Length: 186
Image (tube, rainbow, N blue to C red; front, side):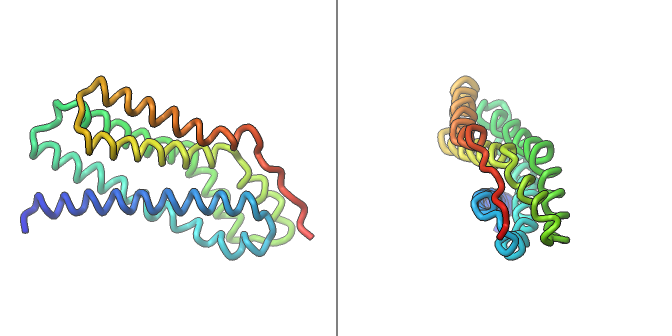
């Protein structure tokens, strides 16, 4: 087994963990937005801690192993690698800027969830930016996978990522149109 094969394995495993973390975050946000009562928050909210622990390190592994693999292949001049690398950095920035502060506030409220704090928790989970962030990041990750499979030049790579961005924003649009109002707990 060579270093190259181990790094390729780490790269693919990182992609799987990135998808798993984003999928978990997507499901949790959707579920908690539809079920704003105290019991689901208490039970499902604990999983809210897991998602960033999956995709945070995975993104680092993908960037480091991908950078090494690209250097070994002498492929940094290829458009798809440069666009993929920049897109992965943007995915990390979107998560850090739009999701992380909101997730920290939600986790803090979940740690002390009670009847008085449930209203604030409901308001936090209803923020459209949570939905927009996870859906946009997921679409961008699919765009990067498309680039890795197709290995196209710079122009087509930029077009593919523009399409992935548009698709991510399109599937996030319902969160802006009809942000659900928190229901009163009975």
